[in-house]
Image 1 (tube, rainbow, N blue to C red):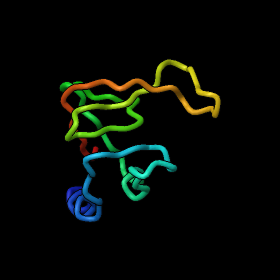
Image 2: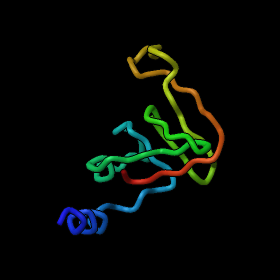
Image 3: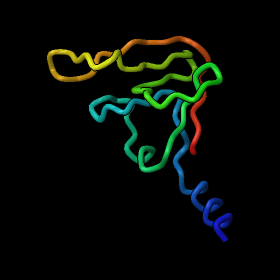
Length: 88
């Protein structure tokens, strides 16, 4: 019976965009997507620390340790490679 709920949940999930950010101030933030678990594959390895991604341009942004900017936002670095986004 759990298989049927999985099928209906997939129909209710919004399509994953090409460019997505976890920062709610970003124009690439889509709150409805974050109601579900999302996975990011970067060069065939799953990453759990992705702050922003762009599939078509082939990059992700990840935090650099515990460093923050003057506004308290984490400093990020852009890594280039093959990016795939999926629902868990």
